Length: 186
Image 1 (tube, one colour):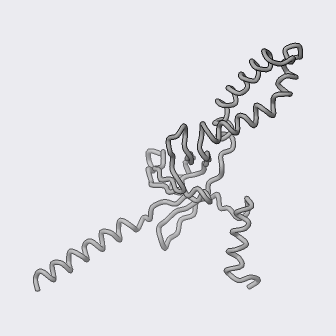
Image 2 (cartoon, helix red, strand yellow; image 1 turned 180 degrees about the horizontal axis):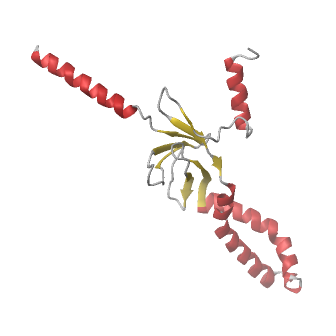
Image 3 (cartoon, rainbow, N blue to C red; image 1 turned 90 degrees about the horizontal axis):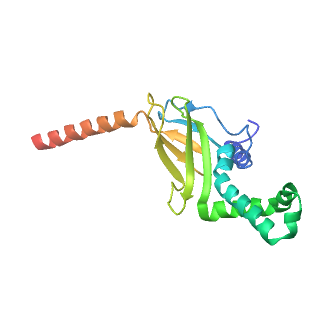
């Protein structure tokens, strides 16, 4: 082999941290040994930008009103006034949205590992209401699937519940019942 398993794992982890498309599996994979299906989701940058639009509109209107009333920009073309205020509008929107409106926001999306139906999750809080922390649990929105999904915020890895867990639980319960019956008979 060219490199050891530990070197490969370290290389793969560093590629994932740097956002490499090669190291991230976007197609669902199911393990026959465990019965767990998994996939890696991506940050939904479009929906994240749309989520910032309400505070952005508020800051845009505030800038337009204040720059017209309180500065000599009322004698200048409004488009130039917007260009002058665009850094203030942008940074004001980001600061307000991330510190007051949303708390630590992250929107992720990707396919369900079972049925490939597009799913979305929002990590963070909205106006003081806490959302999921480091791990979110949800059900697939597809009416035919409805499998349980567990999404990890750190790496956006999505896993399903083991398909064998129910079978193992039933087997263990039957075995425990047989042992209890054998002890009671003895």
